[in-house]
Structures are given as structure tokens and as C-alpha cells.
Length: 388
Image (cartoon, rainbow, N blue to C red):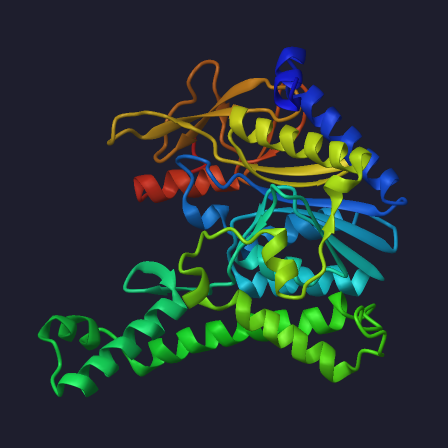
């Protein structure tokens, strides 16, 4: 029986699921010699959640550092599950963990794409299994209200230039696009690509290759120049959009090792593999069965971000009601968010002015910041704390 079926049969509630996750994190720590364990995980398929909230973003730094402050060792295993996001935030995360720890390993049980791959390249050790995937480091930029590949924009412009040189004329179909494009847009795209590639090359040489002392085939000492050269080759390959073609392409262990990057295959360690797979299954089950879309977790603590479903109201309504499920005890509460001074309906709770709602059943604190943001964006109005 698979782990997913096993946990379904056990009918775990939210607290039971959280307790089981913590148990597996403790197992991972023990099997890894007592290293600290920290999790950053995102539900990449969460419906009705804006893509920007699913990305690695500045809003993740406070909960990430909060959970990091609960740990006290000298070596860290960072379990990473993400579709990517801000390279600048990825840089902040890497700097934080390496400043704090003597050794940092990245464990990828599922996917760590784009900016997640950037973080993975900063590990002294990278742990994956055949089912795990990294992704191309394909810098994404915003242009004309759309988000797409910086490399694609640059390559598109180069294609137009080549066509003009070959034919001696400019296809009129390109004119609207070129009129909307400035030299600054192209420079921003080039800067985004260069930034990602520079980070990866630097981190590989500084962290991943620092224990690489001798060439396996000759036994000769590895020089700093050789480490930097290998790091730059791998960084260029990971950023090579022409090779990978799509932003979501999966890069497996075999691909990474073929490029000269040593990966630890944790599937060869049965007990560790079981603990990591059980934990990963539990996280996916939580994402599937709740409104949680981001998880920051240690063996003793957790912070959840969730998208509270808004109970439909007439468009001109003065208030909306949000269904809030407590991640600790599963109690569902109705929270009334006023867009205009309105009486509190029977059985409803006030939307807290500081966005911190206390579960009436277990007193767990639930952050409704994202819920407030969603209501205000959808209604194009600000919430008020005025209740009649």
C-alpha cells in the first residue's frame, strides 16, 4: 500500500496530519546525524490563488526567518518544494542560511524550479531521487502586463534583427511590438539573465565545490580556477533557454550529473527515503485537502499561508463572509469582512483589524493578511473596522 492510501485509511484530521509531519521531520533529522531541518513548500497547483502568491516573494522572508529562529544547530537540511519566483528573494534566503550555518544541504523531494533551482545550487550537498526535478534558471520578467522569459524576449529581438539584415526590410507586423519596447526593457532582460547566472556560478564554486579536492579520474588536486570554470559551465547550461526550450522543463539527476554536478541519491538510503517520501506525501495531502498554499515548518513549529474562500455575496454587498478553517483543530469559522459600516450577523466573527484571527475553539492564531488582500482586490474597496 502506498503512503497516500495509508494516510487516507487512517483518517487523520488537521492536527493528526501536522503531528505526523513533525514525526517524519524528526526522523529525517535523526537519520541525517541530528541536522536542523527547515521546510519551504508551496502548492504549485492551488486553484483560485493568484500566481504571484505562489511564487518565492518578499512576503516569504518574515515567516522563513521566523521558523529559522526556532533552530539552533550548526548544520541545516532545507527541504524545498517550489515553482520558482524572485531571484532576489532566493539570494536573501541563501545568504541567511549560509550566514547562520556551517553546512547547508538542499533536499528536493518533488520540484524546485527556476528560483528554486537557484537556491538548490547554493547547497553544500543536493539530495534528490529519480522522481525529483529541478528546472531551467530562466529569468522571468514583466512586460506589457505579461510575465515571460527574459531570454525569449532577447532571442525574439535577435531574430527580428537577423531577418532585417537578410531581407533589407522590416516586417510591418513587428512595428507595434517595437514601438512598445524601450532599450531599458532589453537591458532589464539582459540584467535578469546575468544576475541568475552569476549567482549560480558563484554559489557552486563557493559551496558545492568547496569539498571537491581531487579529480576522480586522475587524482590531481582541483584548483580554484577549475572550480570556477566548472561552475560557470554548469550555470550557463542551466540558463540555456535554447537547450531547455520551456520554463517548466524538468531537469533530473541524470541531467545534472551529466553536466558534472554530483547529486546525492537519497533513494539508495531506504530509511531516509521513506521518511522524506512520507513527509512529502503528507504535505501534498494537506495542500489537497485545505486552503493552505504555503508551508514554513520545522520539527517543532510551523507557519501556514492559506487562501480563505469568500462566500459569494451580491456585487453591491456591504460585507463579505470568509470561511476560515483552523489548521490546528479544523474548526470552520465564518468571518465577516465589512466593506461599509454593517451590523455583525449572528454566528459570524469580526474580521480582525490586525489580520490575526483567533480560532474560537483552540485559540490558534490564523493570519488573514492574504484574505484581506484578495477581498480588497476583487471588490476594489478597502475593508473597514466599523460595525453597526
